[in-house]
Length: 420
Ligand SMILES: [Zn+2]
Ligand SMILES: [Zn+2]
Image (cartoon, rainbow, N blue to C red; front, side, top):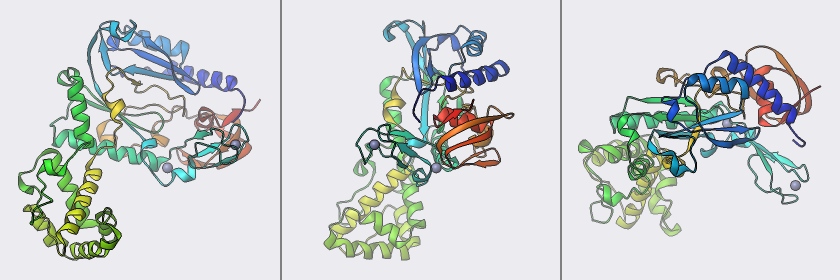
């Protein structure tokens, strides 16, 4: 949508102020040691190096300034507002893992995401960075739906399982909806706080299985008898990979086994690979029983079988890995959305979600900040979307009177303007 959004930004701020005057934010432990940053319409961070002595100070600020975005540091500092960074005096940092629907491919993105060319006004579905007509850089509009956000929740649940079963970590974990397209997991404890940068890197690599080499993990794909680690004794990442491999073999049909198993075979050997896939599928119980005892069964050529099993192991590694962005996960100085604050790209609450409510949590129902009133807006373009029990859109160049939460959502996304 062209033009300026001054009126819309002011309106969002007014609504945010109204919200903050009724709701206190108290979700940042040891608030006086944290760095804060705020953002404007369309810009998540315009100012950093801010600090607040206590919750009263933070909430006074939220009520008076009503920033469209507010983030805080995973790190604790002696003097959080000092600059440059080195002068803050780092005291430690929480672990914060961010899961964003944008990083997980879902088919529905082709339906609800779209782009507009600012130069020639062409538009289309999905994500296209360059306009196919005039080659200008397009503007992307993302409308992650419930399904997209559910995918990020699956990653969160996978992470929680690993933290508990492999690392024995169950305390000090808090989860919040990011406010727009995913979830954030905060892990806080004395041990975590003092983890070195190297330990943080090691932990992320462990979770994402980056650099998992089968040969370093009990697999032998070169000898006459193809081998895997014996299941009963396994722990940690090896157990995780083996569990996913076994689950995949038990649930896949011949086509799926062939699709992944034959991926690196030259075309003249694909037939042999397909034969092996079909054999494995038809005898999956006995194949899995042998896997548990340390043998990767095969028929036909060992060369084909070795490549086949390697590809299946690689697929299992992908299934067993947590989809995390390595760079942001290890960045000790990063700032992340303040839980329970409002998100300026959706108008939703970055709501804290208790562990036992995570499965049921639906941001389009449970993260809404406004439940009364109607607002008249002119909508440039929007896909169908759901807020609470109602479905809206799709809209294209039309005026509509919408419930406040729905109107705010479109205004925050930059696709709707207020009507006079
Ligand atoms: Zn164009
Ligand atoms: Zn979707």
